[in-house]
Structures are given as C-alpha cells and as structure tokens.
Length: 303
Image 1 (cartoon, rainbow, N blue to C red):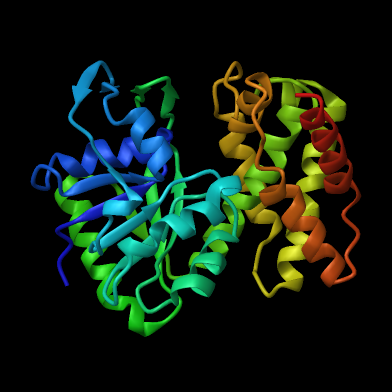
Image 2 (tube, helix red, strand yellow):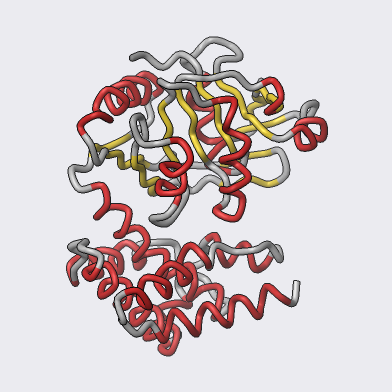
C-alpha cells in the first residue's frame, strides 16, 4: 500500500499546514483540498501563502471527487457531519482515513460512516499554525501521534508512516492511542474553556486564582470520567498537562479564546459537551464542565 493521492477536507490552519508539507513530496495535483460546490466557486481563484511563500494549492469540488489513497479530515468539529457527506466520492475500499480534529469523537463518526478497515487514530500536537484570510504562518509544525485499534489497520499505518517520513512530518506511534487522545482532551478541556470563560490568555489562566481552580477542577472531572470509560488517565497525566501549559507563552491564546474574539462558534460540544454526556452515562458529577458549557453557550448566543 503506497499513498500517491491525498484529499484534505478542511482548509483551516491544520489543513493548510499538512497540505503545504505533503505537496512538496507528491506530484503536482496529487494533494487536493476538497469542498462543496459553493465554497469551490468562491475560493477556486484565491491566492494562498504559507510563511510568505505563494502556494499552488489544488482545490476541487466534491462533484469532481474520485477515490484517493488518503483522506485527512481537518475541519472544525461543527463541520464534521458535512465533511463526512463531502468525503463520499473520495473514499474507496482501500482509502486510508485519519482525523486531526480535537477530542475523542471524530473517529467514531468516521467509523460509523465508512468502517474502520483503514481508519487510523491521530492526535495533532505542538503546532502553532495561524490562518488569517488566505495566509498561513507557523514556526512549529508540531507532531502527529498515530495509532491503531485493530491489526487489520497495520498496512494503513505503515503507508502513512512512509508518507510522513518522506514529507519530513514528525510523528510517533502510540501503543495506547486512546490514552493519547484522552490526554489531549484533558489539556483542552482545561485551558481552552478556561481562557474563553475568563476571557484571558495562557498566563491569566494561572495568575487568576479562581480561573486556575476551575481549570484544575474541570480537568479532574475528565480524569474521573476517563477512568469510568476504561482509560488509564491519572494524576501524572494531569501534572504533565500543567507542565506543558506553564511552558506556553503567557500572552498566547488558545483556539477557543480566538473563536470567542472573532465571534465564531467554539468546540465546547467537543470538550465540556463530551464530558457532561459521559458523566451522565456513568453517574459522575461534572459541575465545572456544566457551568463552562452553559456560560459558553450563552456567550455564543450573543454573537
């Protein structure tokens, strides 16, 4: 199994980041950004830049879509159902799929629609890519954590590893990929939501004592729920997340705070929404995540 053609669904920061990297090592036109007809007509003549360098990205309407070797799902969670519809023409029997979305849910949605024979599990970490208009800037490409849940997915994993090595995209293989997904959810439930609710930056989430206490409490709700789900999330994972967060630029803003400032819908369903639903399933109280959820929904209702 060799990957010669790639379709990326979603042209935000992560989609453009991986598109730029992959098209350097594949033939012209082999990497495509696939979108609905309306978006295609609107953007087909746009000029794109990455770190100041003009890019010859190939855009394609779903109407022209044909099966490819690899589909990368890089939408916002709010656009996932639409993306799964748009992907239909891209997915053949051998098509590999992985998602770079936050949270623990996107793979389940993909599995329900397309099966899991060639579905990989992925966590995208450490990138600082920011898209403004048709321009993308980044300093750190970050790292992909990849894994599989069934032996039948091994050929797909090997093919993706070969492509990433060719493109110089850093990755690690996680033996327990579900733990890695939950560990990132732990971090995001804490910092993303706290910065949005308290209208602050990374530094403020720690210097504001009330914000810090809420952040830590929300994260511990994640740990309790994860353990009920059979995921071995522990206090060591919490301490690891806090260490990462303390190492970030104090003036930096996580994605949900940026969403709020731009009056965009956030990923609260992916974070607090997930923890509240699983908490109810296991009779685990999740009061901080519930309060965050209610506050964020009220904020979004005013946009």
